[in-house]
Length: 155
Image 1 (cartoon, rainbow, N blue to C red):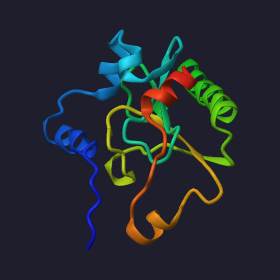
Image 2: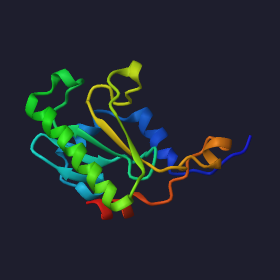
Image 3: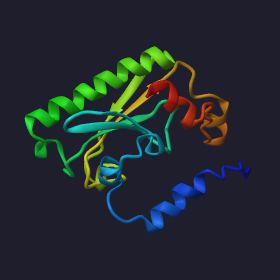
Image 4: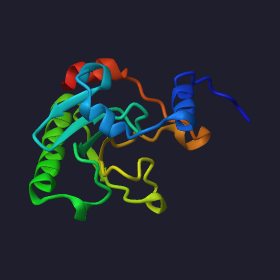
């Protein structure tokens, strides 16, 4: 077995053990958008970068209101949330020029929802060949751009 040094990962591991409260509710209420990597705010929802991205440019959108599933959203919240995803998709196309996207919502623990009480939508840019030898042979994903640099380009 080979080891790869990834010191940034300790923040994620440590947070899982002692995190209290909803991360989306905290970031929605905070005014520190740059620090929280918030990209856009609308009336009912907001978009932010994922600090543990699956790929470069991985963003999420969530309603301000703490709701667990789509049926709990009002029509206005639903439309605005997906309008925000559409707007972020356009922005990511302009800035990163991906070949495609994965868009997903995990509802409930059985579906893999890490934050199961607050609905959020993932938007992950994809490129042909973005799964290189590191992910195939070593189960390691390399993300070549810093979150701060990408936030500046997208915000």
